[in-house]
Length: 434
View: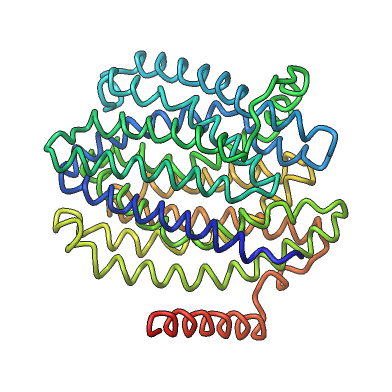
């Protein structure tokens, strides 16, 4: 495998910068809005992101599955942004229509706030399609710059509004939409994706192939977000405000893991399936080590900093983070397995595990929310994520012939990573001293 450390470091720094600004923005929002108001803002955003998740037709999965056909790559690239705008607009219109139909019956924010949030759907969908193409083209730096620019604009706008006393629920939603526009613009300008004349025939074929995986994508999204809707219905806006903050902070634990998955995605596209399986196993082993360290650091840091940064109103979020992080890290660590299974082009191995994990999540949430609120959601999520990963590991081992134990890091690999980390720390220390 080629040395991807420069790409890893570059994308890691971009993502780290974006996450730092995201945390700063969340502090500003938490200080300006009550947990109830934060819950209202998040529900408007949740409707928009749900529209994207249910309506994106799993095009990015189809892109990954079709990328091995080299003659199709230029057209897949050119199609990504126009297709995202078209499919995203249709999804946004449907979401607004459904919201209008259930207004007053589902504890949703007012329609104007939902419509504002849904403006971001076609922008975000194009950014998702385009980012996937950038990673498949082995251009993670462009994806990193897009993420960083989006976070910077969002953070600066929220800080400015907070300092001037104009930070409202409506303003936070508008800034959220603007951030997607910035991400798409930078991704295109940085050469991550090409905006060209779309190939309608291939666009139709991409959507058709994506639909084969779409039930699994929908189930996977609902696995990650159905708990928020259930918590909103049974626990109220305050619980949603605390829980969604915990989700934001828990995502810090997967920073390095996700970056590793992104920069090695193109390496998993080897022509030989056996070679791709060996590479996938090697990637997962190192991601397990990264996940263990980052998960422990995240839980420890949040437990110490939650009250000083966010105030006592959000103190409960620390407990929620402690329950969420194991599941989030586990899900992120096994992301390369999902990418490998996509190239096998069997919808069953993608769809069935997600549907089963979703059923587990909904069932556990129905029981645990009434007893423990946001903490119950976190427990249910971690258990459901573990169920999904167990299926992915089983299918990967069965289809690739690679024993599941090969996904666990060896003592030699752990020692090598530890030595590398110590060496880097020494270099940083020497650099500061000099």
